[in-house]
Amino acid sequence: MKQLAVIIVMLLVSSTVIAQDFQGVATYKSKRQMDFQIGNDSTDTGGNMQLDSDMQKRMMEMLKKQFEKTYILTFSKEESLFKEEESLEAPQPRGMQFVIAGMGGSDVYYKNIKEGRFVNQNEMYGKVFLIQDKLEKQDWVLGSETKNIGDYTCYKATLVRERPVELRFGDASANENEAPKMEEYTTTAWYTPQISVSNGPRGYYGLPGLILEVNDGSETIICSKIVLNPKAKVSISEPTKGKKVTQVEYDAIMEKKMREMRERFERDGDHGDGEHFSIRIRG
Image (cartoon, rainbow, N blue to C red; front, side, top):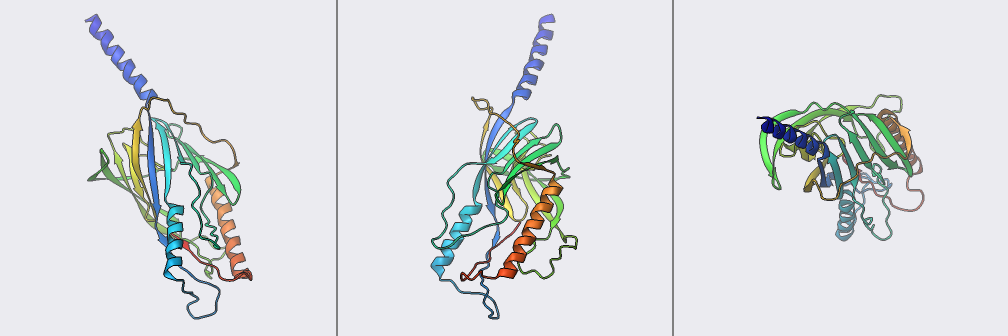
């Protein structure tokens, strides 16, 4: 009887150690929906210009590569680190240059679920920011619909939230003194209870299993590979470099920058160097 009790205690201790040491590495691919609009500063009725089909194909292919990224999520029971996999920058067509607002150069997202906080290191407009704040509560609605992603059975969950309506260049309704208009949107996630960690890509978490796919209406992030308890122990270290701001402060800075860019765009027109292209990215 005493031996049985010892065995039970050893099993309990062993399972606790396993839970504490549990780690995983998941690879995700992202795709973004785009509204592709081509125009110039001409005064014709539509304000549009025609490009030959070869040029349009080259531009679309370039943009497609810009938004198809690979990310690595390193996770444990309580922490995770989500960062873009290093790769060569996609080439741009000769004689053309695109500057796409919202594309960070060193986006690293750390979550500590136990402590309810996150740290997002993000490079924007040549400056590195360190966004430190509490994790937003995510009120997921669990569904019964299932599908397989790789070898895992996943369940559907949805989340309804609000976000500011996207402002466009030339939008006469944009007023610095007005509160931003909000729109409701639905995020759909697919999680697997087979990996019992309440985690997922970027800022997503809070489901009874690892999130393998998520779509917010403009971007889809889907898992392509998972390695559980890799032989070489992985490091999950939160980023520390950058200008420290809260999420609200960062959003205000980005909003101001976008307004400045829009005003400069409207004031300077084509800058005297010919045609320009307008490309609208959703989300």
